[in-house]
Length: 260
Image (cartoon, rainbow, N blue to C red):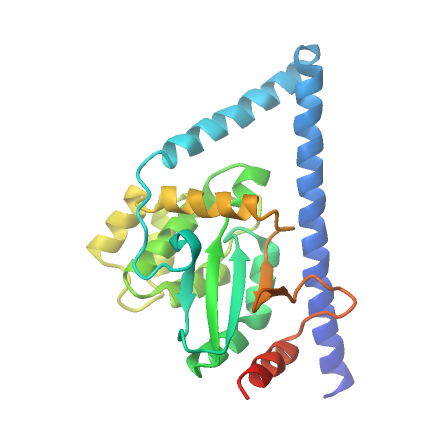
């Protein structure tokens, strides 16, 4: 491998680590702001307005997820909260927690997508995707929820994997809640052959799986995971060690070894 290629891969890993650190910092700042607002309460109008705005967003999300939990076709795992990719007979299982608005998740997908899809296609790796709505809580809005629902609607149509990939390829900037627009989600679905049908559009517009997505996010919170993306190989966190960073080559080697 040339020095230029090594430097490029190192830079990509550093950017991914930096984005995760920035997300953690945003989470920490948001918690601090909410605590401060609760303490000073009536002492400042700005604090009161901030709390009211946050509560209004929570009320809207509660309404969006108030319907029955509709489990998507083929969902598996505990509580049927994961979307599987690959064969059950694969000797390795990759568990991935993601948020479609999460910039670090996009960087992970851009770096590892081809490796993961190739290993799954070869029957060497099963992937369990779990969806979270962390950025909706951090930044406000409902794009994480709506995008996750649309992805699960694509699962009903047997096209989760390609639509999942298109959502990350077309991810808006983090502060931009563009994925809250169902028309945009349906437009992106047009990039996946045969996905845009009347049942798919109805599923997206009705928020058919919103409550299931909310249940998935609750599982994310209960698991006390450090953030998104969280990546586990056969139950072991392989993505959080900055002293021994994961690379596509390392992931491939680990899966190939398990399949020997």
